[in-house]
Image (cartoon, rainbow, N blue to C red; front, side):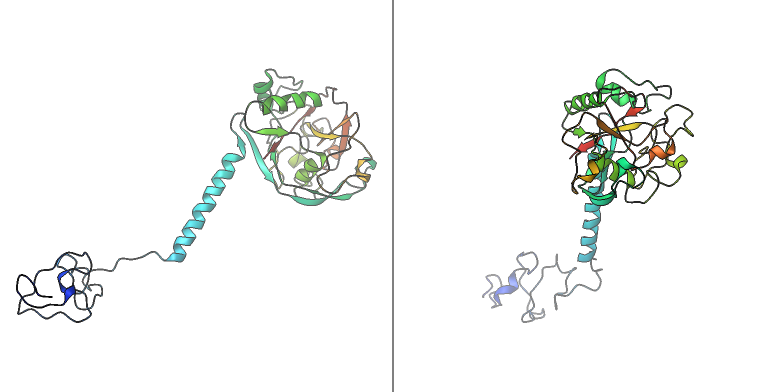
Length: 313
């Protein structure tokens, strides 16, 4: 190529910078000839690259690059953090400030051979579900129903609601479901016992010492107590043993375990009574065991009976 300025013939690639594409000045006759195969660079780009070899200029420090494995690790950490935050916000009902925990799916030996209505011991498997960490409190009930039916209310609004029938519990759930997108229900007997046991072989829901995990007739002094004061079980559920009995969704049949299905049993199809679990402040520790079963008329108002919710995903 003949340069229109100096009329000398030069290679075609000597008049454009290989980095920025800018036009290069004509070389003077005294300058070094271009090195064959090495692209030229303009003065603006030359401080970063060597004109002779195209390698980084030793006077200019090389820019450090983040390794690809480190970027992958950083991305995984961010995804885990986002997942934890999503779980936290999705596991809390904002209106009533009800906290729910995930109970993972699993199988366990339901029942015992200690009492006739708890036998026979049999294997049951349940799907995962959300269960409220605490029993429904008096303030939560009143915010939905507009009144507090509790007969035991001397300890304040953070005490579990009590003195309610199974039918009243259903009315509360129906009104709560009508208020927003979240939906709730009572746990089944199998879900309740599985959540209470929390994968452990313990005498009570959370340990072998009733005084550590339950308010019962021996330590409650005749009154209920605010939720969450005793130690939780392995699923971080409080007061599964003691404080107030908790309604479940199943009809109650003392002989149901003989014919109960293995997967997600929901109780007998017929019957006039409904089950409740967990014992109360009026119960001896023996009646706060995970396997203890009881049932009653769904229209009867028991003074020491409340509820705990399951959130439908």
